[in-house]
Image 1: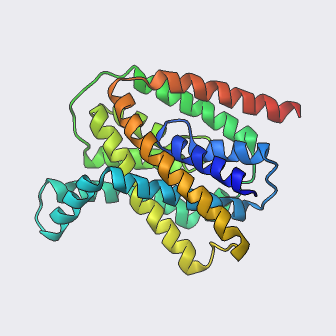
Image 2: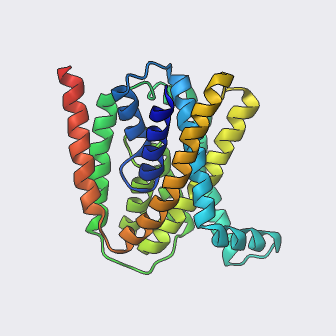
Length: 264
């Protein structure tokens, strides 16, 4: 992988992590177009690093909210901030179960399986269309809805299903306020990504040669900077109910990926 490819992949990750078009799916498509011949584990390692960059950008955008939540937790009171944190933990349960017990199966999907990516992009398109037609409400995230949104996040670990698209769409379909849905969606993934990185570092699963550090860093920086811009933009788009445009985009890209796989 060259520096240019790493930067392009970083930009793709940063933009598509927050826009509901599947960052992992686009990364797999881009790797296939670049002729990436890395093993699934190596491919997943780079994907995890890029996701870590966008997690940091999320923390920068929502730094005030995160600080408020931490302060609420340290007070050890059953206040709104503490309850919100518990809901975040509840939403993490499905993804943690999948990550712990189905890690090898999950890694096998990150080897350039464009047919799977294409099909999952069509699923993402359907979810976005359903969410765009849902009525606007002012409901908050409940413990039950937090778990259901968490199930969507676990399913979105498959390349091609947008994590933000699946979780925001599920939230909106459940009747949750759009702005609150976007906020919860972006914050709920941060602990998971940091946990995944910590687990891989401790277990020695993130391994790359010293010659790759510069390339990985270039992709990391590109993902972080573009993530800052995309996160702010996505919050505005969710408020304006513009998800149908992304549904059309996902459907087109998904069909192209399927046709490309079946005809090559």
